[in-house]
Image: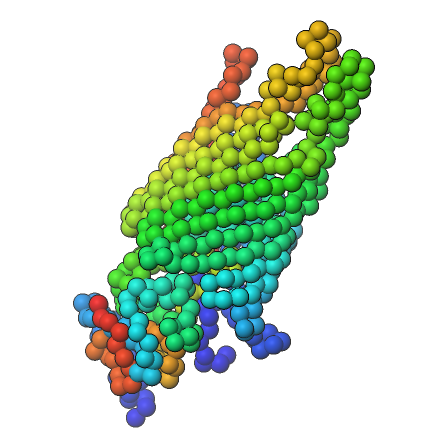
Length: 139
Length: 391
């Protein structure tokens, strides 16, 4: 059953990531009740905002580089191209000023992480938002 | 490996292990292999000559950092440099502490904030040129030992970073001789959407030991005692001992999706001295098409040393002509520090891989200083070819 589920997820990942026009939802765990708007999400993923209004640490989660949703998120929310993002982080990492968000390998990993960690914030195709998650906004 | 999220570096390839305190140690690296040569016959410039050399401007760096919790972090960055015969030196080695969300204190060896690209000038991947502009980035040391406080604030859509740093440097092998200095630096960077503006101020107490200058200064003291003028004052102006230098710098980048502009100006002021006032600037633009970035930069420099009428103002006119044996070498020394030149460079960067780029710059530097020799060739055409990567 578990195997079947992961096949299903893999399959749907494939379908949705090749369907570039699908809406992307920015999500947190439903237990995370902070008011977070788009410009805060941008600062969280640029390493500039490290805590939620409640005071708990922000754990931003990225999909892997080259992923369609990731590129869409970088463009729409962060306003930067993948190359600009890479250059942005290389400047911060080697000056000890910050590390890029953690990356998960797949949408399935993203789902699992958001559903288990109330401090995590990520994004995935809007159709795949599961129970126990709050959609902050879609684009 | 635990199926746990690894802090991923720039690329997917990062490396992390558990340290003694169970804190994870992150490792990141960068490398630039750069070669260049001068195409103008019998000329050398910026450490380049007619034979291509892939050593002097190449480097490989490894950085280790660890979060110990409670906002404490230790970072060390080791760089092996070609011009140091690939000897390894710690370029950054500090402990930082997050006092609050917006205030951080760094203690240890860290980058001195002279320029806009000071922090990451070793990481070639982070900029478009094969090397940062030679005329502006002339200070022969990048890092110093000390304490800095960094404050990050947000004003609406404007991100502000203010840094204040006190540090010292001992450099036994500077180009003028053993150098030591202590300095206070202020550095402010503001980022608003596509625009980054940076301004910095340095006030330094500077000592440079140089035997030639010592000899010259001692001769002036003797001459003053013999001819009845204040030779010590001239000696003090020749020597760089407990001199106060100020250094200011400002920079601006405007980065739009496909094109960008960058400009920077800096000025060193060490009044009434051999170093005088050095003003260096550049302005450039670039255009990104796919994996390629094409760019051009114009550089302008004016480096002065105190003029002789200021240096000799206390010497009676009747005495001066008899001091040729001293004014000759003094003038020659000061004249050697004066420079006036401009340069134009054009280059291309090709991001042939998500973590690596190939860069080629062609630069022509033109000497604008008057030269008595009618055959003098003021042009120096040189190129640099670099491969740079982060890992």
